[in-house]
Image (cartoon, rainbow, N blue to C red; front, side, top):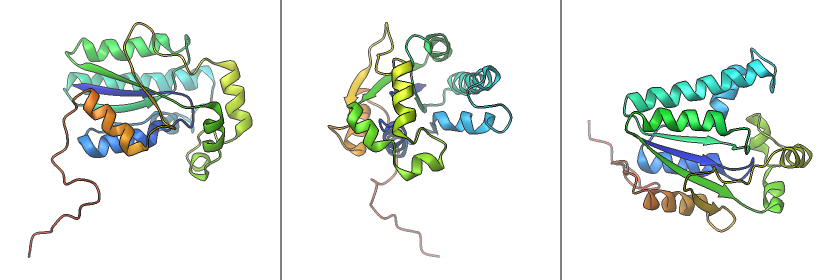
Length: 192
């Protein structure tokens, strides 16, 4: 099992790059907002029960995928050192089942983050969508630190398109490619 683990600050392009990786490899995409959206109707965003349940969902999905040998692409914001305990539990679940963790740290300048954070789709998905909120988070948490004790592929998303970044990840970790036609190539439907 490969766990492709993309991390970085809000608006760095995690979901955009992860989507291309999932399309090119056929790996399922379990992005961080799926667990947030599941818990948000029940518990107040940011409360202790909210985060306990979000982390339980994430760890449960990753552990079950590892037990079943199911490759997975996952996105998250890593806040050093606060995120270390749950991050280590996720990695242990994968590695104890013979899986491999493929770390990808996405970065870009704060100016680029501030420009991107205003995109309309971010607000619609319940993501950080204002410069003020982003600045508060970046001032409160260390979201640019690499996960300690492990090697990460570092990509500056201001240097690459999402497609180029995804290709670098796939090549670096030698990920299996889906047996699908390349993106943008029409498929033929069988005659009826």
